[in-house]
Image (cartoon, rainbow, N blue to C red; front, top):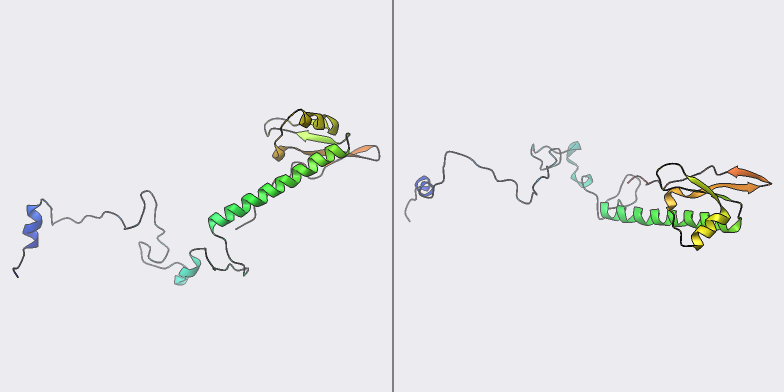
Length: 164
């Protein structure tokens, strides 16, 4: 076997041996920065004593409360279902109050400007004629009790996302 001169071979192909080039990290995507405090980061130092099991959430990992921690996708799906259920119950409550008592006051708004307050009778007629409303900004404004109107304490209650 002959002894190859690697420098001469590289020079034949126009490759400079006096410089060092770097073309990124295998598997990394353009525009995504790597966390330098994670194990295997650019500085090589582990984060918080090197406990890499808590660095990623996922299958079977437990949070401090003991329940399995959801992945980001599972958490978003759970929030979507909870939000839909919350607003469905709110819509049922508002429509039910309007149908039950025609003197109930309903607050309607599109989220911009001042809300419009209508009676349950007008709200019912509005819906029967094909009217639409945004349940985020529609709520029971006041109900009639013993001849006087009592204002709703939870007016325009919004869905509150739980912490992950």
